[in-house]
Amino acid sequence: MTPPDVHPESRSSSERNALRQRILSLTAQGYGLRNNNPRFAREYVAEALALAEEAEFAEGIAEATFVNGVIDSCAAAYDTAFAHLSRAGELFRSLEKNTALYGQSRVARWMGITYRNIGMAVTSLEYFSQALTLAEEARHQAAVGYALMNMGDSYMVINEPEKSQDFRRRALEIALRTDDTELQSQALWSMARASESLKQYDEAYQYYRQSFALRAAVGDTLGMGTSRYGMASVLEKQGNIAKAFRIYLSLWHSFRSVTVGVQQTEAFITLEIGRIYAESAKPHRALPFLQRSLSIAARVGVQPVRASANEALAKYYKRLGEYEQALSYFEEFHRINADIAQRESKQTIQYFRQAFDFERAQKETEIYRLRNEELAVANAQSERLLLNVLPEAIAKRIKAGETTIAERFADVTVLFADIVGFTELSAQQSPEAVVDILNRIFSAFDIFSEQYNLEKIKTIGDAYMIVGGVPNPCDDHAESVAKMALEMQNTVRMLSRSMGLDIAIRIGIHTGEVVAGVIGQKKFSYDLWGDTVNTASRMESQGEAGKIHCTEVVKKRLEGRYAFEKRDRLEIKGKGLMQTYFLAEMI
Image (cartoon, rainbow, N blue to C red; front, side):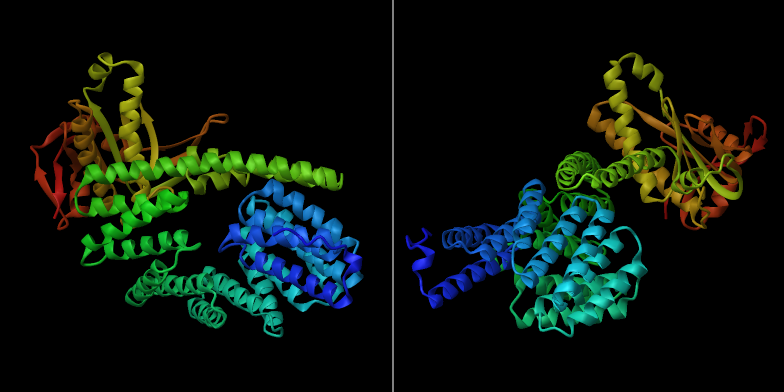
């Protein structure tokens, strides 16, 4: 809209007041549409800003600049969000005291939200604390409530759930004393999230219900859906699958008739419906929902949902015994997760740089804090690398300062696998092809080891070693290893066909006692020693291609659940004559 060509001073007092109310109304509408319809939100704010500048209305200019920053933050345009919010803070400072304090409080709060969105939760707490101080000075209870709620959210991000719940509870107490319906519904929903994370499911469900009622009263469609989704999530965790499923279905039917701002929500909902169907007596009904979730996620670019949908489809096809389809979806699931991690790493670096530049321009003392944040990121990356080499429990002990880690485990199951004839095969292939073959096979094995909570110990050439019951003891390690062994055989047969190669694996399994520990100072290695390891290795080397060779100890542990083929007694080096078996299949 083109502003009227009228000088501000020529308007009457009532005309000026009406125009100012209109400008503030437009910015409020823009703020309200920041998530549901950012395009319309920007249009409203652009009109408000043009009118405010023409009318020389300082508060309107500050409000429009602030809302532009909020819209940018919600749209993940963090560089421009910082610039708009910084400018808005300057504009608010020049206004009448209470208006200035309230405006600066909201700017500080959204600065905190923006910092939290780029992974700087500690920095966000500093801004939320500023927002709280300014809101208290302005005696604006709703702003106090929002600041407390946001502080609770950030404490949850840095894994302090009890402190998070305390701040969220204080926010709710204040919210219920105001007439701010949006604050009340958000505070209730925030408390529900806190209670759900602490497994206080009855309390969480009631908070979700109350937030839904408030959002329904004002016609907040997305908010209603978010609250009902939370209710279903709690019911599912409590084991009330049928009721959760009915809510998911109801949400899906509701959202199908709405076209603005809910595609991502529909992707989440159809994913949950598909997952529940996949585990039901009618798994075939899962497929259209999982495929729809994947399709929507791919269309709107929601990578975490794409990854989850691929994982759910992999499990669906695996349950049907369609291993080739399952493996392709598992591979896509891991590829997307790797892409997400890489992109997030690049974005984090980018946003840290933007934040660093912004803060340096604001006040020099903040530089040291940001350097500490960057150091924290580097430490997190180092920790991820350590976890790729060592089991998580062992990595934590090394980080805590332990220099010698060695333990005895009385009951574990060890598996060795070897690709038969791989030396001859590799002589016929290029180095790149050899690495690609091993990578495809061992990547599939890595997926299965995670699925069955087993620990990969090492690969040596074309040999692969895993263990169950180490470093975290468990009762079902023998069965988990047996399941993985069968998966490994099926996968190699399938990959052999798809790659046009004649390959097979020998597998050996034994159960018993081991010693486990970390060796090395520069390149850590977690390894196993003992007779059980040697025996499992002998089972592999004296087995047959395409078969799973087990000791009698393993057979007795799995008897009644798995079928075995008895072999003639074998002379095993260091053990003498032994009765062994081939594991055939699950009964």
